[in-house]
Length: 510
Image 1: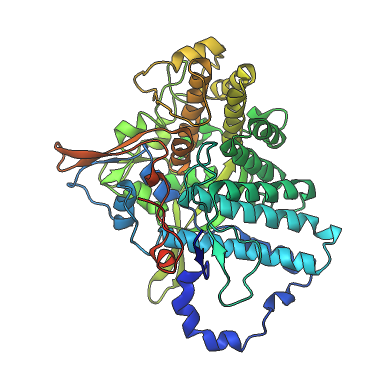
Image 2 (image 1 turned 180 degrees about the vertical axis):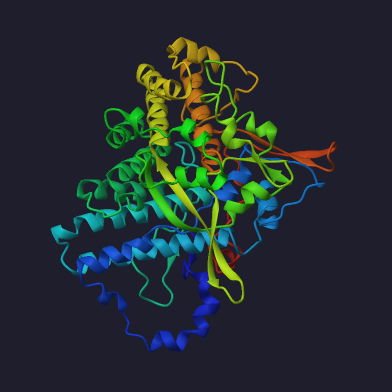
């Protein structure tokens, strides 16, 4: 496997400018991390401040091309290139370069904390911080391998290219890393999670902003679902969910009564809500404005029919009131958005009118974790428990709180219906036709609703082998040849940043 001399090669230009300063600095500034409190403070920076949400969503089947009579106002090149599965050449907001850089930056903070804990003798008082650092390191690598590699599957992951798994702070000018394989990356993520969970201590002053117990087990559940470890996914999800997950559900009816998009967004991201297991409050992204104000590529009315307005087995949508939330259009009235990832702007230089756009992101919720468990049950062949979990959603979402049998749900998702997306899967996890396949479709329908605008739909597409067709419009009425990405295609792995490839890390095949 070809090697790279530095995983932070994209910083080389800056490095050479500052080389003299580097050489004049004591070789191990991490020695300053010499108390429990300093380690805990370091971990605040161990959460990624950028996720590949924009690229994921633009690659999914949640968006379409509205035609060249419309324009993309923000991130235009990155948006259009992601939609076309082209190499993203934009170096700035929401680009592969920025995702790579900021995820590894967060991983570096986790590694510094872990080294400091080791140097202080692995004291029992630091078990909680060690668990958080391991979970942050695992999460950062999980984000990266989900973006820059193919989805884990039992057929090809032993040879599919992974991403470098960094397990120690950089202490030399030119450390050597390898990409490894998807399987080897997943093994290390699993190792870090399994080491962290028994050490976990729920002692945070603001739990929602850390890997608290529920968030830790929700992450473990999602990871094991993607890993094909159905029993562990269900087990860990159950720890996060407790005995009555329905009591923690988001109140969509209450959201629908709020007057302004910002009010809905603030309520959606509220750290006091039990549904929000983990919140990352300072994500540096243009996605908060892009997904609501870009005109050409987006979530138009036809896509709303398959996401937020999709019909469920009772023959209606969620509570019949969600239209009061999602019928908020971009400035030209082309695309619809659900205001849960709105931008807030941090002014860094008021005189120059310069600042940084941020969003608040909720990576783990009670609803998504319940969907993980329902899918894990379905994949185990435990249809009874899968249906029980699906009925928790249905009872919460249907105004009449109706419940459905395995046979009814299976029949509903066995055929294509208007406003109920039917997907053909070519999963490498050996899903059996009939009840099992139909129940997985039912879960994916729930996940598509819950995860709209978050990019999670793309990961479901990757791991279950769903074909995506992206129209290309030459005009409002004339289409070019569509772009079709088939199951486990090379294009499902985002190309590595150009600077990293130039430095020697093997590129993803095309």
